[in-house]
Image (cartoon, rainbow, N blue to C red; front, side, top):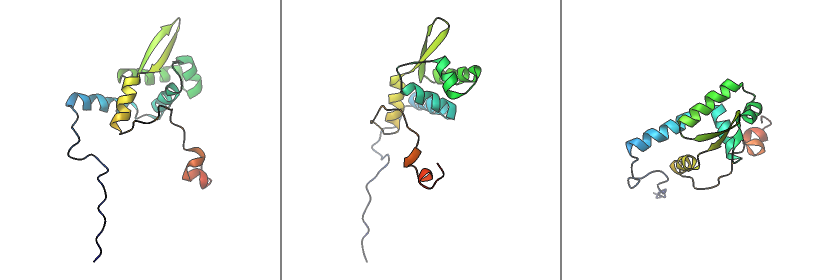
Length: 130
């Protein structure tokens, strides 16, 4: 009878400290705010620049101004973005500490580069579906 190799524990083990209840609530609210594709697109755009005018988000996302404002409000309430006013325009930027906390929660410490679409590297693209 052949012995099977034991795989290393790739997930959280019993030595991983539990999150405090307040931290769990905060993280859940932030992940919930990212549960909409438009908000993910906004965060991705903001990750590519120091700050972005709301007028540019309206044009880039092909969404109505009230819709973009709603999504930005949800992201702001979750602590993921902050804004400043200059004249009639609002400029938005990511809150670096909040993004770092999400990245750390997911076990990542890597790049601060914005996410790219799967594009040519995806199986769908190779199969002619992308």
